[in-house]
Image (cartoon, rainbow, N blue to C red; front, side, top):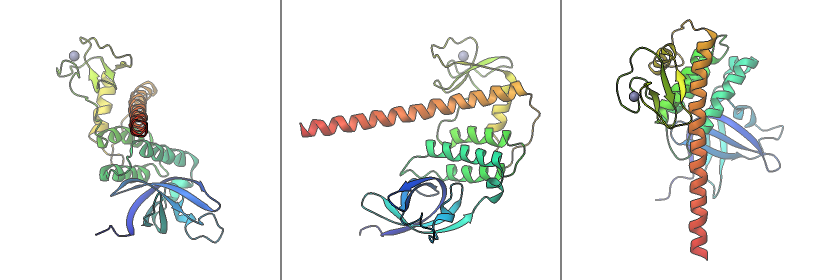
Length: 259
Ligand SMILES: [Zn+2]
């Protein structure tokens, strides 16, 4: 039996770009299907009912009609428009930060319900929040966790010994913390202070919506954010590299068939 021509999904709208004369190509992250792109035809016309609900950073229930190449958005109903997030410039910047990373880490055709829930919880947590540092860093770390890229924070990734109090190192490529006795060849090894280990462990066992405030100096904030940024960038680059590797492979196998 062929699959039904339409389906419904709850999704977070991540972004859209103009498509054709009056349409929008919308990218959204769904609870059940991962990242999806679909066309909202006529959405840029002034009388369109679609466009308001398709604003980025809106949680919505969508009805999608399957197409040959691209699916069509048939109906949209806003579940949560995150008004407090969109009213404030800092909050909206933080919201787009979350959307960009969900776009980068979310796979097409791959359901990841924890990733969807994490994104929605983080947007609630940073909406109108004057101290968004900890919820956002918690999002960074939990994003790695729900993507199957959880960094090791308790043992040395090389010798597997438990980390003792003191200074350590951190390698995104090798998968987390290292002791000072191990001699990594990885160029991306960064210093890791004991305080930063403690904060990272706190982020690991918290969620953006319920993390307890902790006192952190500017240097420690910079260190933790830097470690997370480098790790997220490393995995995003890795993903881009493996995608282009797969594309090259497909191209080569196609040309091998046709030549
Ligand atoms: Zn070691």
